[in-house]
Image 1 (cartoon, helix red, strand yellow):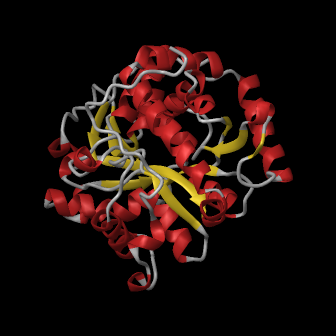
Image 2 (cartoon, rainbow, N blue to C red; image 1 turned 90 degrees about the vertical axis):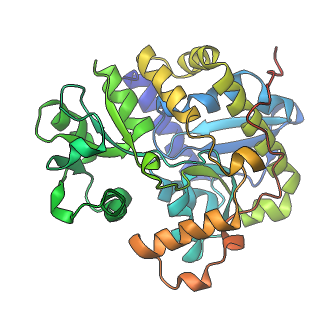
Image 3 (cartoon, rainbow, N blue to C red; image 1 turned 90 degrees about the horizontal axis):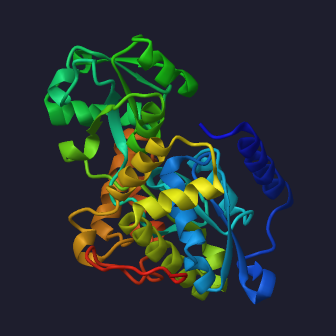
Length: 347
Protein backbone atom coordinates (compact mmCIF):
# COMPACT_ATOMS: atom_id res chain seq x y z
CA UNK A 1 0.00 0.00 0.00
CA UNK A 2 1.03 3.62 -0.41
CA UNK A 3 3.34 5.13 2.15
CA UNK A 4 1.52 7.06 4.88
CA UNK A 5 3.40 10.31 4.32
CA UNK A 6 2.35 10.31 0.66
CA UNK A 7 -1.27 9.85 1.65
CA UNK A 8 -1.14 12.67 4.19
CA UNK A 9 0.54 15.01 1.72
CA UNK A 10 -2.06 14.27 -0.92
CA UNK A 11 -4.93 14.84 1.48
CA UNK A 12 -3.45 18.12 2.69
CA UNK A 13 -3.05 19.26 -0.90
CA UNK A 14 -6.66 18.43 -1.65
CA UNK A 15 -7.82 20.23 1.49
CA UNK A 16 -5.83 23.31 0.57
CA UNK A 17 -7.32 23.33 -2.91
CA UNK A 18 -10.87 23.07 -1.65
CA UNK A 19 -10.27 25.83 0.87
CA UNK A 20 -8.76 28.31 -1.55
CA UNK A 21 -10.41 27.49 -4.86
CA UNK A 22 -8.71 28.06 -8.20
CA UNK A 23 -8.17 31.18 -10.24
CA UNK A 24 -10.46 30.19 -13.10
CA UNK A 25 -10.15 28.06 -16.21
CA UNK A 26 -6.54 27.64 -17.30
CA UNK A 27 -4.97 30.13 -14.91
CA UNK A 28 -1.49 31.13 -16.07
CA UNK A 29 1.24 28.84 -14.77
CA UNK A 30 5.01 28.79 -14.96
CA UNK A 31 6.53 29.65 -18.32
CA UNK A 32 3.23 30.88 -19.73
CA UNK A 33 1.55 27.47 -19.61
CA UNK A 34 -2.02 27.03 -18.41
CA UNK A 35 -2.21 25.82 -14.80
CA UNK A 36 -4.95 23.19 -14.60
CA UNK A 37 -6.24 21.28 -11.59
CA UNK A 38 -7.53 17.79 -12.34
CA UNK A 39 -9.39 15.95 -9.57
CA UNK A 40 -9.67 12.17 -9.52
CA UNK A 41 -12.74 10.25 -8.39
CA UNK A 42 -11.16 8.88 -5.20
CA UNK A 43 -7.81 8.79 -3.42
CA UNK A 44 -4.91 7.87 -5.69
CA UNK A 45 -4.88 4.18 -6.67
CA UNK A 46 -3.05 2.09 -9.29
CA UNK A 47 -6.02 2.51 -11.64
CA UNK A 48 -5.01 6.17 -11.99
CA UNK A 49 -1.51 5.32 -13.24
CA UNK A 50 -2.21 6.21 -16.91
CA UNK A 51 -2.91 9.82 -15.93
CA UNK A 52 0.39 10.10 -14.07
CA UNK A 53 2.19 8.44 -16.97
CA UNK A 54 0.65 10.95 -19.38
CA UNK A 55 2.04 13.79 -17.28
CA UNK A 56 5.49 12.20 -16.99
CA UNK A 57 5.69 11.46 -20.72
CA UNK A 58 5.04 15.11 -21.54
CA UNK A 59 1.60 14.95 -23.16
CA UNK A 60 0.17 17.84 -21.13
CA UNK A 61 3.34 19.90 -21.39
CA UNK A 62 3.20 19.51 -25.17
CA UNK A 63 -0.26 21.10 -25.07
CA UNK A 64 0.93 24.02 -22.95
CA UNK A 65 -0.72 22.68 -19.80
CA UNK A 66 0.81 22.42 -16.34
CA UNK A 67 -1.55 19.91 -14.73
CA UNK A 68 -1.81 19.07 -11.06
CA UNK A 69 -3.54 15.77 -10.32
CA UNK A 70 -5.58 15.99 -7.13
CA UNK A 71 -6.97 13.05 -5.12
CA UNK A 72 -10.74 12.82 -4.92
CA UNK A 73 -13.15 11.65 -2.24
CA UNK A 74 -15.96 10.24 -4.36
CA UNK A 75 -17.39 11.23 -7.72
CA UNK A 76 -20.09 13.39 -6.12
CA UNK A 77 -17.43 15.60 -4.54
CA UNK A 78 -15.48 15.71 -7.80
CA UNK A 79 -18.60 16.85 -9.65
CA UNK A 80 -19.26 19.51 -7.00
CA UNK A 81 -15.65 20.72 -7.17
CA UNK A 82 -15.84 21.13 -10.96
CA UNK A 83 -19.31 22.69 -10.82
CA UNK A 84 -18.23 25.35 -8.33
CA UNK A 85 -14.97 26.13 -10.14
CA UNK A 86 -12.68 24.81 -7.42
CA UNK A 87 -11.01 22.57 -10.02
CA UNK A 88 -10.96 22.77 -13.80
CA UNK A 89 -11.46 19.13 -14.74
CA UNK A 90 -12.48 15.95 -12.98
CA UNK A 91 -12.73 12.22 -13.51
CA UNK A 92 -16.16 11.09 -12.41
CA UNK A 93 -18.67 8.28 -12.61
CA UNK A 94 -21.12 8.72 -15.47
CA UNK A 95 -24.23 8.00 -13.40
CA UNK A 96 -23.18 10.51 -10.76
CA UNK A 97 -22.68 13.09 -13.51
CA UNK A 98 -26.20 12.51 -14.83
CA UNK A 99 -27.84 12.68 -11.41
CA UNK A 100 -26.05 15.90 -10.52
CA UNK A 101 -26.67 17.51 -13.90
CA UNK A 102 -30.37 16.75 -13.52
CA UNK A 103 -30.26 18.51 -10.15
CA UNK A 104 -28.73 21.66 -11.61
CA UNK A 105 -24.97 21.09 -11.72
CA UNK A 106 -23.44 22.88 -14.72
CA UNK A 107 -21.04 20.13 -15.71
CA UNK A 108 -20.70 18.00 -18.79
CA UNK A 109 -18.91 14.79 -19.77
CA UNK A 110 -16.38 15.67 -22.47
CA UNK A 111 -14.15 12.58 -22.78
CA UNK A 112 -15.28 9.02 -21.99
CA UNK A 113 -12.15 7.30 -20.68
CA UNK A 114 -14.01 4.17 -19.56
CA UNK A 115 -16.27 3.03 -22.38
CA UNK A 116 -17.23 0.11 -20.14
CA UNK A 117 -18.07 0.16 -16.46
CA UNK A 118 -15.71 -1.51 -13.98
CA UNK A 119 -18.65 -2.98 -12.00
CA UNK A 120 -17.83 -6.56 -11.02
CA UNK A 121 -18.12 -9.31 -8.44
CA UNK A 122 -14.76 -10.40 -7.04
CA UNK A 123 -13.96 -13.64 -5.22
CA UNK A 124 -10.86 -15.40 -3.92
CA UNK A 125 -9.33 -18.16 -6.05
CA UNK A 126 -10.18 -20.90 -3.51
CA UNK A 127 -13.80 -19.78 -3.08
CA UNK A 128 -15.25 -22.31 -5.50
CA UNK A 129 -16.43 -19.42 -7.67
CA UNK A 130 -15.10 -19.50 -11.22
CA UNK A 131 -17.98 -18.00 -13.20
CA UNK A 132 -21.36 -16.37 -12.70
CA UNK A 133 -23.20 -19.68 -12.26
CA UNK A 134 -21.07 -20.45 -9.20
CA UNK A 135 -22.32 -17.30 -7.46
CA UNK A 136 -25.81 -18.73 -7.02
CA UNK A 137 -26.49 -19.54 -3.37
CA UNK A 138 -23.51 -17.51 -2.18
CA UNK A 139 -23.23 -14.45 0.06
CA UNK A 140 -22.02 -11.21 -1.52
CA UNK A 141 -20.98 -8.03 0.29
CA UNK A 142 -21.53 -4.50 -0.93
CA UNK A 143 -21.40 -1.01 0.54
CA UNK A 144 -24.69 0.16 2.00
CA UNK A 145 -27.14 1.58 -0.52
CA UNK A 146 -24.68 2.41 -3.28
CA UNK A 147 -25.18 2.24 -7.03
CA UNK A 148 -24.09 -1.37 -7.41
CA UNK A 149 -26.60 -2.75 -4.92
CA UNK A 150 -29.30 -0.54 -6.47
CA UNK A 151 -28.47 -1.95 -9.90
CA UNK A 152 -28.06 -5.55 -8.73
CA UNK A 153 -31.57 -6.48 -9.97
CA UNK A 154 -30.29 -5.90 -13.52
CA UNK A 155 -27.66 -8.60 -12.93
CA UNK A 156 -30.26 -11.00 -11.53
CA UNK A 157 -32.46 -10.36 -14.54
CA UNK A 158 -29.61 -11.14 -16.94
CA UNK A 159 -28.89 -14.37 -15.08
CA UNK A 160 -32.57 -15.32 -14.84
CA UNK A 161 -32.31 -15.53 -11.06
CA UNK A 162 -34.58 -14.45 -8.23
CA UNK A 163 -33.66 -12.01 -5.49
CA UNK A 164 -33.10 -14.77 -2.94
CA UNK A 165 -30.67 -16.70 -5.14
CA UNK A 166 -27.81 -14.55 -3.83
CA UNK A 167 -27.66 -13.15 -0.30
CA UNK A 168 -26.54 -9.52 -0.26
CA UNK A 169 -24.97 -8.23 2.96
CA UNK A 170 -23.88 -4.69 3.76
CA UNK A 171 -20.29 -3.94 4.73
CA UNK A 172 -18.31 -0.75 5.22
CA UNK A 173 -15.89 -0.04 2.40
CA UNK A 174 -12.82 -0.60 4.53
CA UNK A 175 -14.22 -3.92 5.82
CA UNK A 176 -15.07 -5.54 2.50
CA UNK A 177 -11.67 -6.95 1.58
CA UNK A 178 -10.72 -8.06 5.13
CA UNK A 179 -14.14 -9.70 5.43
CA UNK A 180 -13.70 -11.49 2.11
CA UNK A 181 -10.25 -12.75 3.10
CA UNK A 182 -11.59 -13.88 6.50
CA UNK A 183 -14.36 -15.87 4.82
CA UNK A 184 -17.22 -13.80 6.23
CA UNK A 185 -18.76 -13.78 2.75
CA UNK A 186 -18.01 -15.33 -0.62
CA UNK A 187 -17.59 -12.34 -2.93
CA UNK A 188 -17.63 -8.55 -3.07
CA UNK A 189 -19.50 -6.24 -5.40
CA UNK A 190 -16.83 -3.72 -6.31
CA UNK A 191 -14.98 -1.92 -9.07
CA UNK A 192 -12.63 -4.41 -10.68
CA UNK A 193 -9.92 -1.78 -11.13
CA UNK A 194 -10.01 -0.83 -7.44
CA UNK A 195 -10.48 -4.04 -5.45
CA UNK A 196 -8.66 -6.29 -7.92
CA UNK A 197 -5.25 -4.63 -7.45
CA UNK A 198 -5.81 -4.43 -3.69
CA UNK A 199 -6.40 -8.18 -3.48
CA UNK A 200 -3.31 -8.80 -5.60
CA UNK A 201 -1.28 -6.67 -3.17
CA UNK A 202 -2.58 -8.95 -0.40
CA UNK A 203 -1.25 -11.99 -2.25
CA UNK A 204 -4.44 -13.22 -3.94
CA UNK A 205 -5.22 -13.66 -7.63
CA UNK A 206 -8.91 -12.74 -7.58
CA UNK A 207 -11.67 -14.17 -9.70
CA UNK A 208 -13.29 -11.19 -11.45
CA UNK A 209 -16.82 -11.50 -12.83
CA UNK A 210 -17.43 -8.39 -14.92
CA UNK A 211 -20.96 -7.09 -15.33
CA UNK A 212 -20.06 -6.14 -18.90
CA UNK A 213 -19.55 -9.83 -19.71
CA UNK A 214 -23.27 -10.31 -19.04
CA UNK A 215 -24.10 -7.70 -21.64
CA UNK A 216 -24.65 -4.92 -19.07
CA UNK A 217 -22.84 -2.33 -21.14
CA UNK A 218 -22.75 0.83 -19.07
CA UNK A 219 -20.41 3.77 -19.35
CA UNK A 220 -17.84 4.04 -16.58
CA UNK A 221 -15.85 7.15 -15.65
CA UNK A 222 -15.20 10.09 -17.93
CA UNK A 223 -13.61 13.53 -17.92
CA UNK A 224 -15.93 16.32 -16.82
CA UNK A 225 -15.61 20.07 -16.94
CA UNK A 226 -17.95 22.96 -16.28
CA UNK A 227 -20.13 24.77 -18.78
CA UNK A 228 -18.23 27.90 -17.79
CA UNK A 229 -14.90 26.39 -18.84
CA UNK A 230 -16.41 25.18 -22.11
CA UNK A 231 -17.85 28.63 -22.81
CA UNK A 232 -14.84 30.68 -21.73
CA UNK A 233 -11.96 28.51 -22.92
CA UNK A 234 -13.07 25.80 -25.37
CA UNK A 235 -9.53 25.61 -26.75
CA UNK A 236 -8.27 24.58 -23.30
CA UNK A 237 -10.85 21.78 -23.22
CA UNK A 238 -9.61 20.59 -26.62
CA UNK A 239 -5.98 20.62 -25.50
CA UNK A 240 -6.70 18.91 -22.19
CA UNK A 241 -8.73 16.24 -23.96
CA UNK A 242 -6.03 15.67 -26.56
CA UNK A 243 -3.33 15.31 -23.91
CA UNK A 244 -5.50 12.97 -21.85
CA UNK A 245 -6.55 10.77 -24.76
CA UNK A 246 -3.11 10.43 -26.28
CA UNK A 247 -1.39 10.08 -22.92
CA UNK A 248 -3.84 7.46 -21.70
CA UNK A 249 -3.58 5.49 -24.94
CA UNK A 250 0.23 5.72 -24.82
CA UNK A 251 0.22 4.40 -21.24
CA UNK A 252 -1.87 1.42 -22.31
CA UNK A 253 0.54 0.70 -25.15
CA UNK A 254 3.56 1.06 -22.83
CA UNK A 255 2.35 -0.37 -19.55
CA UNK A 256 5.75 -1.06 -17.98
CA UNK A 257 6.84 2.53 -18.57
CA UNK A 258 3.49 3.75 -17.24
CA UNK A 259 3.99 1.70 -14.07
CA UNK A 260 7.47 3.18 -13.60
CA UNK A 261 6.08 6.71 -13.98
CA UNK A 262 3.38 6.02 -11.41
CA UNK A 263 5.85 4.50 -8.95
CA UNK A 264 8.06 7.57 -9.24
CA UNK A 265 5.12 9.92 -8.62
CA UNK A 266 3.29 7.84 -5.99
CA UNK A 267 5.73 5.36 -4.44
CA UNK A 268 4.75 2.55 -2.12
CA UNK A 269 2.21 0.50 -4.09
CA UNK A 270 2.81 -3.18 -4.78
CA UNK A 271 4.27 -3.60 -8.29
CA UNK A 272 1.90 -6.42 -9.26
CA UNK A 273 -1.06 -4.36 -8.06
CA UNK A 274 0.03 -1.41 -10.20
CA UNK A 275 0.42 -3.65 -13.25
CA UNK A 276 -3.06 -5.08 -12.69
CA UNK A 277 -4.57 -1.64 -12.17
CA UNK A 278 -3.15 -0.40 -15.46
CA UNK A 279 -4.13 -3.45 -17.51
CA UNK A 280 -7.60 -3.49 -15.97
CA UNK A 281 -8.09 0.17 -16.73
CA UNK A 282 -6.93 -0.29 -20.31
CA UNK A 283 -9.40 -3.15 -20.79
CA UNK A 284 -12.22 -0.65 -20.22
CA UNK A 285 -11.18 1.79 -22.96
CA UNK A 286 -13.10 0.22 -25.82
CA UNK A 287 -16.57 -1.08 -26.57
CA UNK A 288 -18.25 -2.04 -29.83
CA UNK A 289 -19.38 1.55 -30.33
CA UNK A 290 -16.21 3.58 -29.87
CA UNK A 291 -14.08 1.12 -31.84
CA UNK A 292 -15.83 2.75 -34.79
CA UNK A 293 -16.25 6.32 -33.52
CA UNK A 294 -12.97 6.65 -31.59
CA UNK A 295 -11.62 6.58 -28.04
CA UNK A 296 -13.34 9.09 -25.79
CA UNK A 297 -16.53 9.45 -27.82
CA UNK A 298 -20.07 8.99 -26.57
CA UNK A 299 -23.38 8.70 -28.40
CA UNK A 300 -26.96 9.83 -27.90
CA UNK A 301 -28.03 6.19 -27.70
CA UNK A 302 -25.38 5.32 -25.14
CA UNK A 303 -26.15 8.33 -22.95
CA UNK A 304 -29.88 7.69 -23.22
CA UNK A 305 -29.20 4.17 -21.98
CA UNK A 306 -27.47 5.70 -18.95
CA UNK A 307 -30.38 8.09 -18.35
CA UNK A 308 -32.83 5.18 -18.46
CA UNK A 309 -30.62 3.24 -16.07
CA UNK A 310 -30.49 6.15 -13.63
CA UNK A 311 -34.27 6.49 -13.77
CA UNK A 312 -34.92 2.78 -13.21
CA UNK A 313 -32.41 2.10 -10.46
CA UNK A 314 -30.83 5.29 -9.11
CA UNK A 315 -33.72 7.62 -8.38
CA UNK A 316 -33.44 10.00 -11.33
CA UNK A 317 -36.65 12.03 -11.36
CA UNK A 318 -38.34 13.34 -14.50
CA UNK A 319 -35.98 11.53 -16.90
CA UNK A 320 -37.94 12.83 -19.89
CA UNK A 321 -36.63 16.29 -19.00
CA UNK A 322 -33.02 15.11 -19.33
CA UNK A 323 -31.67 15.09 -22.87
CA UNK A 324 -28.38 13.41 -23.84
CA UNK A 325 -27.15 16.76 -25.16
CA UNK A 326 -27.40 18.09 -21.60
CA UNK A 327 -25.01 15.40 -20.39
CA UNK A 328 -22.19 15.17 -22.91
CA UNK A 329 -20.41 16.64 -25.89
CA UNK A 330 -17.92 15.16 -28.36
CA UNK A 331 -17.14 18.59 -29.80
CA UNK A 332 -13.76 18.90 -28.09
CA UNK A 333 -12.37 15.49 -29.02
CA UNK A 334 -9.99 14.29 -31.69
CA UNK A 335 -10.94 10.62 -31.49
CA UNK A 336 -8.27 7.96 -31.63
CA UNK A 337 -8.71 4.59 -33.30
CA UNK A 338 -7.83 1.32 -31.53
CA UNK A 339 -4.90 0.62 -33.87
CA UNK A 340 -3.30 4.07 -33.72
CA UNK A 341 0.18 3.92 -32.22
CA UNK A 342 1.08 6.86 -29.98
CA UNK A 343 4.55 8.29 -29.45
CA UNK A 344 5.39 10.24 -26.32
CA UNK A 345 6.36 13.89 -26.85
CA UNK A 346 9.38 13.34 -24.61
CA UNK A 347 10.61 10.37 -26.70
